[in-house]
Image (cartoon, rainbow over all chains, first blue to last red; front, side, top):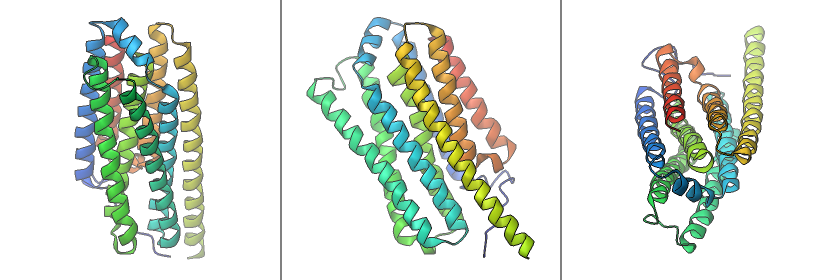
Length: 189
Length: 94
């Protein structure tokens, strides 16, 4: 059984490669600064932000968290199986990963639909401007992640381990961003 | 060779088990976070607990699913520093 060995302890070769980790660092800093700005702004009118936050459905948020976490677990399993050259099983788990992402998007669409129907659009107030921009950019990342996973689905056997790991790292980055967004936007303001 | 194969198989099973344990932990922490958010009555400490629980989830995903634990200390330090700074600033501003 062939198992590929990469020296992850090397500074230049974190799992997925240095470029994806530079991207992840920049993304986390960007979303992190935007969330800090949101909390700073909430101090100007705490009651408005608190009441606006209560208009969000935290059950949807928690369910979406679970969808992404389970999807991330399947992605990690896909990478393990790929490294063992078990392509059929890896392909199966890659499908499950994508289903997790699609479920996230379906629930998000449902949530957005209700917000729009209730008139809680991007210019409703400052909180909802942040809500739409931050969750909207996150959704774009999930969509890009799904495109990458779809490409992997059709080219799995030809892929290099580093390529799959880089794609997996991007997918996990969507989890990480959501793990910052969910508590700040849906729970603590 | 047999020993190497057995070790390899054992490592795979252990690795998969760790992933499963991590997933269970993540789901439990998500439910716990939701529970604490329902207790929210303006107390700053509730916000801190929610942030810390979310921080644990963040670390679990990064170190287990993204295999950051295997990486150079610089990358581990970077992620932990970012998270500490983020939680610290949010808590300070809350």
